[in-house]
Amino acid sequence: MTKRRPLVAGNWKMNGSRTESAALLDGIKKGMSSASKAEVAVCPPYILIPLAAEKLVGSAVAWGGQNLSAHESGAYTGEISGPMLRDYGCTYVIVGHSERRTLYGENDAMVAEKYGAAQAVGLIPILCVGETLQEREVNRTEAVVARQLDVVLGKHGIGSFRNAVVAYEPVWAIGTGKTATPRQAQDVHRFIRSRLAARDKTVAESTRILYGGSMKGGNAGELLTQPDIDGGLIGGASLQAEEFLTICRAAD
Ligand code: PEP
Image 1 (tube, rainbow, N blue to C red):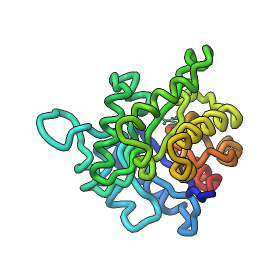
Image 2: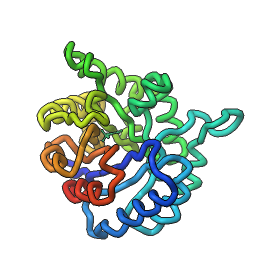
Image 3: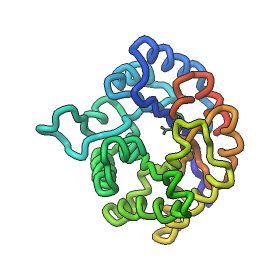
Image 4: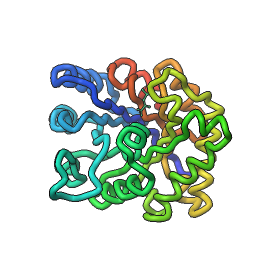
């Protein structure tokens, strides 16, 4: 069985002044052990990416974007492209976060375009999938997650998952303080891996699948010991260095 290196990625969303972010970056950098088994990344707002690059260069912490344009350049006012993120040393970029899907109308096809645009410039997309509470209540969790994955698989193929990370984020658990139970999360993670394995077992075994949704220092341990949970995508708890570092240590 392939050993998957855990990944803990912080999604700062639209939070943080320059001063607060500098302190947060310093705190994370200082608290990270160079012997850490888990890989750690932060995804600040675009405008703070140069600061992250300046602070984190040469450290064990990677950085990435929260979104990107599907286009490389041109007349797309307000957008940021994959080549721009690469230019500032980003390793990762989140695509298809539920807030992008629900607040900004990103559908599966648009998410698949962005996934491809990221990989075209060597960024590793963190592809977010997950069901709403209503979908869970009518037993549509697997159908929704399968649809979200299949659009990307159909467009880019299973081979593309060698350079991608999947994040299972139940929408009802994001920013709500309600975490999926380890069992609920593991069941969906296993389903995602089996969906990938139906196309290629080796790729499925090596693809990291993160859990996201109100993960904190206090609940990370039991989630991260599930066999198909390979790390976390962390929102609120990534804004406090100590809390974030506790999750990183749990992933070790
Ligand atoms: C997220 O936004 O990806 C997330 C998981 O947020 P939170 O940890 O705050 O639920």
